[in-house]
Amino acid sequence: MTAVAEQSPEQVQHEHHPHLQHHFYSMRQQYESGKLGMWLFMGNEFLFFTGLFAAYTYCRWAYPEMWLAASHHVDWVLGATNTIVLLFSSLTMALGVRSAQLGNNKGVRNYMIITILCALAFLVIKAIEYSAKFEHGTLPAHFWSASELGAQGQAGPWIFFGMYFLMTGIHAIHVIIGIGLLIWVYLRAAKEQFDSEHFGLAENVGLYWHFVDIVWILVFPLFYLVA
Amino acid sequence: MNANQQTESHAHVASVKLYVGTFLALVLLTILTVFVSRGIELHAASLPVALAVAAAKISLVLFIFMHVWGENKITILVLISSAFFIALFLGMTIVDTHTRGLGNPVEADGYYRQVNDLPTIMDINAGHDTEAADTAK
Image 1 (cartoon, chains in turn blue, orange):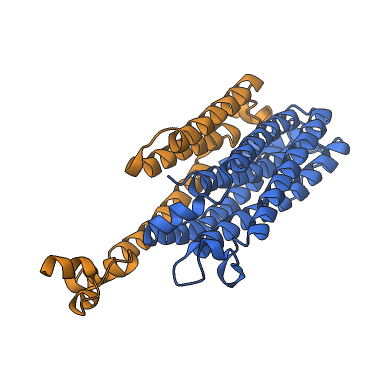
Image 2 (cartoon, one colour; image 1 turned 30 degrees about the vertical axis):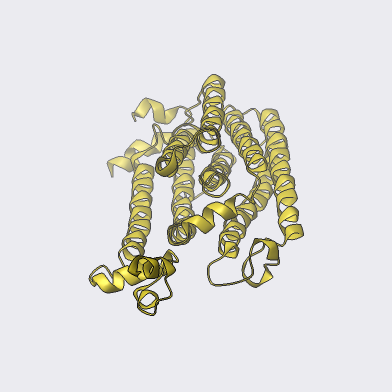
């Protein structure tokens, strides 16, 4: 009961905010609820990728020499470049969320454009990497055709490339979905919808984008820097 | 959290300097992880070191970019329970795969040899292992 009593002055204060949904007391409550939902979703995402990392752990432990030899056929320079590109996009995303918090919609639009360009650059570099793999035939399972690196057998480098394509591919799908979300934030900013009380969308898309960055921070040393 | 804060904006606006500094730290750690794996020979320590650097980078992203520092308790609870289930998932998988057959020394040895492509006890008995055959002479 006291909670309601505490909320009511705030409710009066925020009643006229155009983006307050009728089922929330206040803009703050609306923001916190949305963010909690986003964090629960992120918990799911973390566990989803944990399944892949568990498979990775087993394969690498079972075939350490093969893993090391196969990892020499991925280009760590391209991987490192993509790491920097993604880290930079995380910076521009964080600055974009900051602009949203300050109600600077023009800033949000500019930062979203830079972030989207970084995401596209990431995908282009990824495509260059993938096309080299297709050219050399270092592909998963029965798509393997790099006979000079070994004919198909029980435990060869195709296992490494199976994990490589699975994990970097699912990560790339997350980047593509992320571009869609960044465009959404851009369109909201184009309608001048962000202000110091209403920036939950930017914050939550930011959380998702940083999560994509976190996955890459793990994928990079595990596939490109096996030593 | 107090009543005054609630009536004002709920944004915790961090400085641009903090974000740029975090980015630069992340780039430095990336250079460090490349150097550790490509520049020097760490052998068995290379994987733990690479994972430690990755953990440091992830902490920076979580605490600063994702505003976990100063986040409310329910979000921290979600994060801690995620970490718990990740540890459970990875931990149980590793415990399973790394200890298979350990209850039976013969089976464990056979599994170890099979996985590492070493001659098994059956190969040695059949005289297929030349090294064992040489020693016998």
